[in-house]
Length: 314
Image 1 (cartoon, one colour):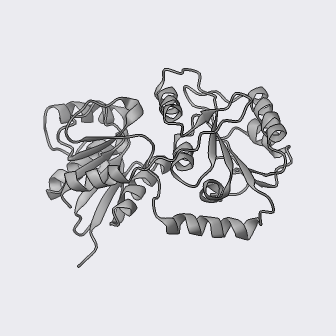
Image 2 (cartoon, rainbow, N blue to C red):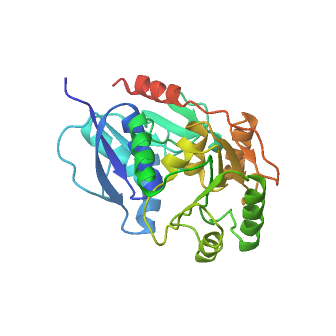
C-alpha cells in the first residue's frame, strides 16, 4: 500500500512550515511543499472578500506548481489559508488549517487545528490545540541528541536557557535578561548551563548572554544549529522566554524537564499571556519569579492528531 502524501501550502515562515511538517509526520504521511504569496497587501485583503462570497478563484495569489496526486492539503498562517483552501478545492481533496484562520469562512475547511489561546468557536470541524505542533517521532529527538553530543559532552545535569526575541507584545530588555540570568546561575549550582539564542534575538541580548559562563552556548547569529531537541530531552530544567510559543511547546510536550517561563509579555491578556496562563493551570510550566517551580507535567497531543485523522477520513 502506497504511503499517503499531503501537499503543504506554505508562506515560507519557519514556525508555520514546521507545524505543517509535524502534522504530516505525526500521521506518518509524506509531504511536498508549495510556496504561496500575494503580490500586494491589497490582493491579500481581497482574498478575504472573495472567500466570504464563496467564490473559487486563484487570481489574488501566486502558488508554486505541485504535480502529482495528494490526499489532502495542509496550510498554516494567514498567507497560506486561502491558497491552501483553493488548492484543495481544485483537487477535490480535504483541507487542513493549522492555526485559526481569522477572517476566512471556517466551515469550508475540513479540519482546523486552532490554538486554545485563540478561544476558537466550537464548530464541529475545529479541534482546539493547547500547544504548537512539533515533531512527535522519537527518531527526530534521538537524532537531535546525537548531533548535540557531537558538539558537547555533558558532565553534569543540564539547565537550559532558550532566548527568543521581541515582538509587538513582548519586550526584551538587557536589564531584565541580566537579572534573570543572574538568578538562574545562583539558583542552579552543580549543574551545567546551556544556552541558545534564535534568529529573533537582538544583538545586545546575544552579547549579554555570551558574556555568561555557559558550558555550552549557541549564538544563532554566529552558528545555525538547533540544540532544542537535545535541551528538552536531556535537561532537568528549561528556561524559555515567554513569546517563544514554539520552543515552549516543545519543552512542555517532551522529556521530563521542569519548565520555567521568562516573562517578557507586556500584555497578560494577549494570546501569548493566555497561552502561558493555560500552561500554568495544568502545571506544565511555571512563570519564573526568582524562585524555582515544580511544573513538569507533559502535555500529550496524540488525541489531537487522531481527531484530525477521523475528520479527514484518511
